[in-house]
Length: 241
Ligand code: ADP
Ligand code: MG
Image 1 (cartoon, rainbow, N blue to C red):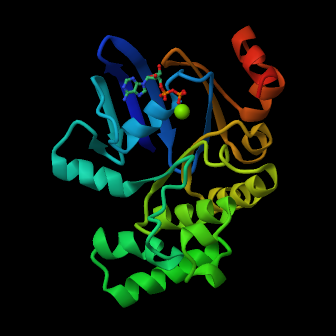
Image 2 (image 1 turned 120 degrees about the vertical axis):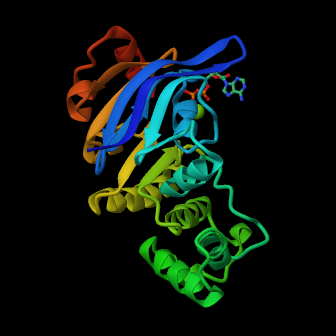
């Protein structure tokens, strides 16, 4: 059963066509790794899924709801699709615990005590329970990104979207974030991940998509298509990541 369905989806920014009639169906439990040259539309594709960008053609259904539906539907979609960005985007004036508890209390309407209990469990899950009282500025980049993942999980999304989550991190900090993502995948979370980490794609991805000029050029098994790229552009791309 598909949880995300692009149906001839287009996105224009003025005259610029960034998504060009994308057809893509993602099932629950899939870990889709999205790669492609800069400007090919990867971030836009992710951002359309949780309504950060509005589509300009076709349709896009998330968990049975169209992103072109009512404002209420869009709010529901935003809760179902958690997003993690390259720049961790934590609230700097809130502690790790408060960052994670924010969604459950504001969005899901939990009491402060319940929200903080949920937040502590999530910090535990990402290995940061002992940093609950720390502010983002007191955490490493890898720790901040793990807090950001916990924060996104706090509203119990059905899908997690990751936009180059390790690109801003030093190599030695990337792995701790990738490990958290791997654990999430192993629990069966549906994930769409834009990343240049090809080892992660091969080990954790269930599907790899190569985008070019706003459309899907390759869609296949990560190990197969990374080891034997089906076209020269993808081959060329892989040589440069
Ligand atoms: P990628 O993530 O693959 O690098 P993006 O989805 O960020 O690509 O961008 C695809 C194209 O859309 C690029 O040419 C980019 O400049 C353009 N674009 C992205 N966001 C906007 C925007 N808000 N306004 C105008 N153009 C945009
Ligand atoms: Mg991008």
